[in-house]
Amino acid sequence: QVQLVESGGGLVQAGGSLRLSCAASGSIFSLNAMGWSRQAPGKQRELVASITSAGSVKYADSSNGRFTISRDNAKNTVYLQMNSLKPEDTAVYYCNAEVKIVRGGRWADYWGQGTQVTVSL
Image (cartoon, rainbow, N blue to C red):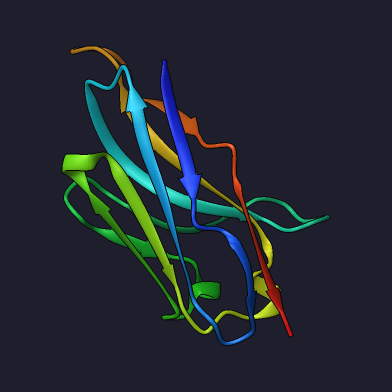
């Protein structure tokens, strides 16, 4: 089994910063893309940012240069640095990872349990 554990969420005032972390562990043969998505109450889950194992990144327009995704391949960990936070960034943030658990196996997508980010005025 593969586990993804997020940390770093919390309550912050508008304009503040938070750094989310997500560590993947378990039966991991290979780790491909990792990413962050978020889901606000009453809204669909949306992609925030993703990063490949080679370091190529993609961002949602809503990140607008405020968020930075990075990863430490040696630690199987992905980070999301969030600056200039706005109340509309309030959501549960989930990390995900494409994992191959055996050589020659198929890639499968795993998700963490989510971490709450609340931005107050």
